[in-house]
Image (cartoon, rainbow, N blue to C red; front, side, top):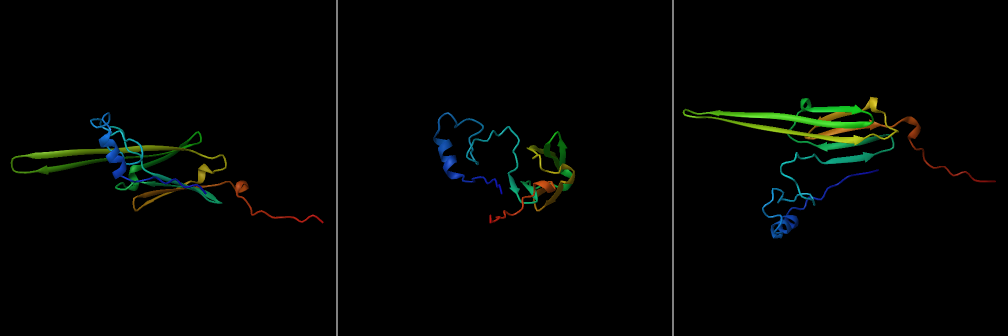
Length: 151
């Protein structure tokens, strides 16, 4: 079984960045993940990849989205998960009108294993987590090891 976990310590890296003279005025001053984040680049959702006996599972943390925002595609053995969300907020007063726009998107791609069944992938989104289940081919499901005595 494989599991991807990220370190989320903020303070040590923030202090390190403030003490670096070459990074103080750069747009990537904040370090949330053990590596610098380019504030101009789109953020990638964290992913857990879990392998079980019968399937692979991918869990993407994508809060604030709706089911209709996601697009899941398979092409040439590559599973691509993307999402786009546009928001507009309008506030009107007696002497003013304020409009704000927000646009968020991401795209993550995963190479499918040869023993997966791409036609049977299942995707569910609930509580801010997109869960993908990729069943394995029947022949690759490992059976328990059996010892045979030699007589």
